[in-house]
Length: 576
Ligand code: FES
Image (cartoon, rainbow, N blue to C red; front, side, top):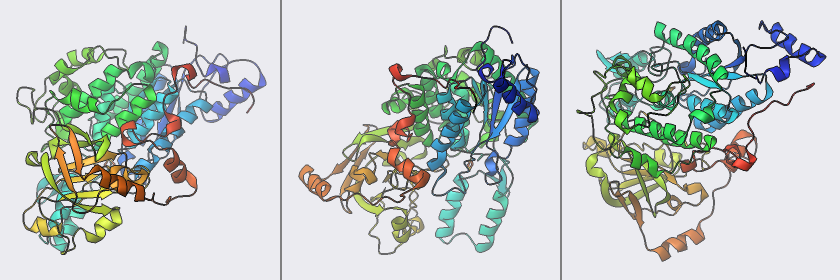
């Protein structure tokens, strides 16, 4: 490769014993490196694991990525990372998202890498990998593993996540037999890949493509398809060309790129978790990300993806309808089309080559819903803001006043939610406190508080709920999430009591606790912080440094440095 100073040459070029030792290390791994070290070394960060079926398709794709890198004249060097599986990790994979980011950044810092291909799929693995890549700031391409096959129950397709929540409500209401419950379990075990609804994994894959870090059209390819292998090979080739062009994540992830991601998030009716992940990624890139941008930029954006939980289709339908390029073509008038992508083309040029949307991607003239998919509220109950997915909420509940019933933690909620003596009515506002980033720690997806069984049996399907937790991207309901500051650090949720009136007005952007200020001050003075749950290890480090949801729940020491302290990951070489 001519004309490009490769970072890896600091390790590999030269005639001394240190460079020789470094070349021998790579040659021993089967990687062909010469004395001139003029081929870019591309790290292939693979998070496949048997403990994470969503990421298992990645190993097959990694083979293609490596082939693509070599076809383009590079050297592919695979390394493993922590695998963040949403289903098994407790208390939540979110606790480890920042750890994955640290791993990737530090693997780049410590090794002779010129570029990266990160392979991720399940919810937290995409933002975690990208956060690390942004901070490392070497040319990076993301490869995702696609959605898993669609299960069928009673002859009808069922999406992952959303169907489970509905079936669990049926089960709790006594309307689903033991045999049906067992049959439902069997049908859900249908293969590898990410959830096939527009949950967090699919949302983050779509947004990564919109941000310009993927092969155009690749984000929605279902797992196991030949097209996925081809896209992975192209990603390997792109990583090499991005090194040649000097296309680093921080030059692609501009304010315009994040604005485009917010617009796409509305257009797909995506996961609320994406609001946190985008804030974290923007924080790494040094791009301001005020929470109100979510509602401001989305106010005129139509929801076009007819995919669960906002719509009725599943991710293969989104792919068949043209995927991200077709979606972007429909909302092109809202986009900053000059934003650059890893291909070297602008997002506008990608749109120019896009097919017209069909099927599960509605035309802008016939949207699923007008006026965006998310609202942001702020007020005496959430001074630093909270988020609601309006596209998955009951419109009549977006303006609501009602008395609170407060649960102090998940165990308390589980113990009392179905208690026949709970004085709950459809007007009640259910509050779940103590589940924020510090509180658990990790901010689990406990926010979709179940409707009390007594009310389900009476036909109630939705209620206003408020929490400092997150909820799954496959969840639904009138749930105000990520209330900040959280209860565990003394936010107002710590001060709410049963019977206090809560006033929600999503169109006006407010959420207030109707309690006199002097009474609130009296409660605040008597408030005692909860004891730390962890005294050592990663959870203790996390709880000591995690930022609140509007700052993406990143760790305070991992955000972008001020310009005067900016130092990218440059090699420090010599004998180890
Ligand atoms: Fe992994 Fe949904 S559980 S993508």
